[in-house]
Length: 135
Image (cartoon, helix red, strand yellow):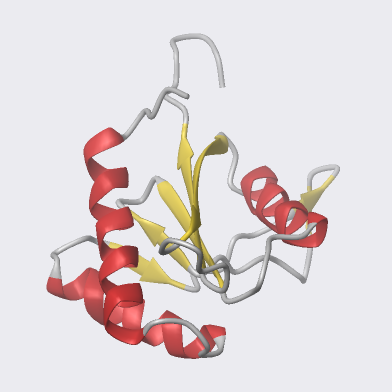
């Protein structure tokens, strides 16, 4: 798989591993969310936590939107999951975030953090580069 924002993606994955190394598994998502906010700041990675993504329907703005855990570098969505395994509902959630944040597309998902440990996932989503005349 081609990683478009390779350097930025690796920095974010490094921050995910640092949080996992420090906290391990077994906490709820809000704990990992707070740890990631601290770690992204310590590593100098620009981010917005739980930024609202607005939705439209046939050109009409909707009252409800989506809030991914992080938007890093104004181009990469990071979704944290403290679960045993990713389900179709988790994948649909990230897919919906991407649809709301056009022209973002799924680029990478860092799977289980740690050998044999399946309780913490750091989902990483990036954007594709825009091409002249295309969205």
